Length: 106
Length: 132
Image (tube, rainbow over all chains, first blue to last red; front, side, top):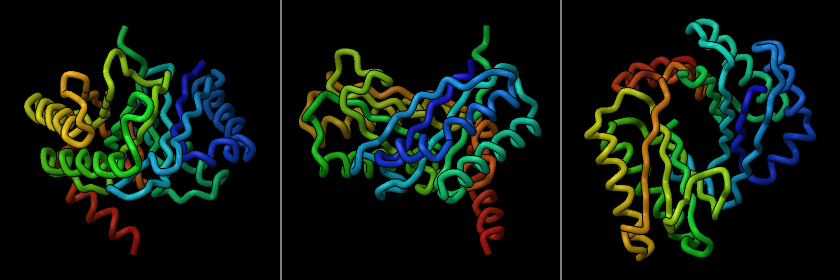
């Protein structure tokens, strides 16, 4: 399983699931790492999220790869992840922070 | 990135104190690192199981780009703890602030791989030129 955490502004989370984003992320991790995604949705209640000191519309999608990634491969996957997120949600690229980490050192 | 998560006990923070703490955390991060405020995200939660709280009233965990000095990380954490106490009246001993790090190259924000610490100006110039 690829652990994936999605921090989203409240009201987005149910919509995002309905938009098929969960399934898209699952397909993404299957294709990239050969494993399904274990997604944790963390909604930020209204008035509780800030970016640049102002109310935030940003989402953060963060996952840990099953293998160490070379820079080109990681960037390509990050771009793919942001593309699927923006396509599914209608958010702009400036509203998405994507993180793909290497596995924890053994 | 950075992302500062503030987990707190119920009813410790009202809307106004959240806004003030978000401003102070943003100001602290920018003052210590010279990073632009546009990168700074702050989110508040009440007793969220996903984030640490331990025996504290307020617990901030900040995930910043890797490469800041130990002194910078200490200054960010200690200033945040002081701010939490000043804004809420909660004793500083009941606050905690920890800093974790993520390599900039692991993060895509604003459609671009994040700049390494200290390379923000060049990144911003390149980013803005693409917007026009």
